[in-house]
Length: 517
Image 1 (cartoon, rainbow, N blue to C red):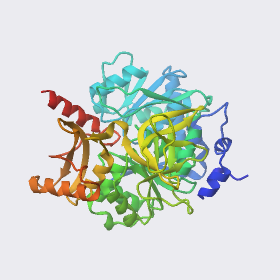
Image 2: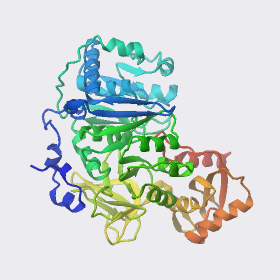
Image 3: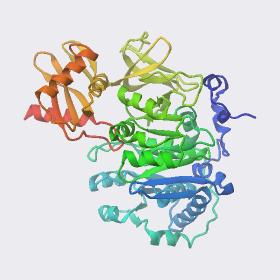
Image 4: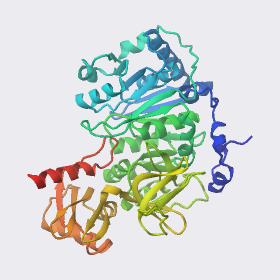
């Protein structure tokens, strides 16, 4: 019997997809299901390579499925020996490493709930999340252990060499016994340390739905070598970059340490990775590094998520790697709903497009009254779920061929003198200037027009009136006479969320404070 993984064409995806067929990819069923078994234990034959951890300092760690299976079994037995029960939370605040993957999968095997935490959180960010999810154990490194100490009810464990040696005293045999509807992972969406986003609570069966994004958003198929440089503390890095490909027995690449574009490019070459999924920021930094032509690549499928990609970077990707980069759109809460079917020979990837709906999915652009917008008209993107339309809080439009386009978050729209403008489109135009490395655009108050555009520009060139005029004239020439930024400031860097997206909310908040001073 053919499985969904046997098909690569867009037409076949539409013809053969059915929700039940997602379950056919796995060993488990609607009653008994365990993420760790599906991602690790069933792929141990032949000592196949599971993970290549690319380290920023130039090193690499290679982990086989067999090694990961045995050590995660030991960790599961360790947790049970410590009195950790089904449903207890185990927080893991580590960079990608052997210890990180052992802990994530060992916790889920034991029936505990794994809670990955971003390693760059400070004391406030750690405390907020730990107090919220109340883990019994927090596994971290030496530096973060001191920062995490003193939180009531939490046993801080340092994942050093001595800890890994301690695991050797436990049995490497373990049989998971979890239900499909048992909770497996609590995931925090990105946010500031002072503003705690709610934890998204995932059950083991969430891995099944994830296959929609894996098969049609990142184009993963058995036999791929897949790289995702996003942190596995976040949804993209964990679900799309780790769990989905491992569930298909695919070797993955992960990145540990401070991101360096050239280090990643070298790893893509040396590891002969044929599939990569990253944030738009990662690809933009590859372009800005100016060294991509020093390496050769085996890439055939490329995807990105998190925020729109500017057209200059899209052109760079196509020219450098020989194929288009495919947008994958969704949210942590609703999952991936719009894709570009990487690897499908019969699907045309349109520059700037979010693509089309996943098989079986329904997405519409709607006006404020809830009616479907005609092609070319901007409205709110909505997804059909549980017999109702669910708002995404993103704006978009659809063209005559059914391709969707992003028009920014609802709160990123700038209305000036009655004109509605998109921060995303203005940023894309500014990024076409050869001296601009990054940019964010927001609306700021204006007594005459209500709002005007203010652009925050990152550049290595000295700022000045002449540079400002070049930017303004560029936007006038590419968009329209009224959409240019009336205010331009030059900054060393832009505020980013921990997931790497530009945080325009921080800029808007700063402007409000400045206006009220």
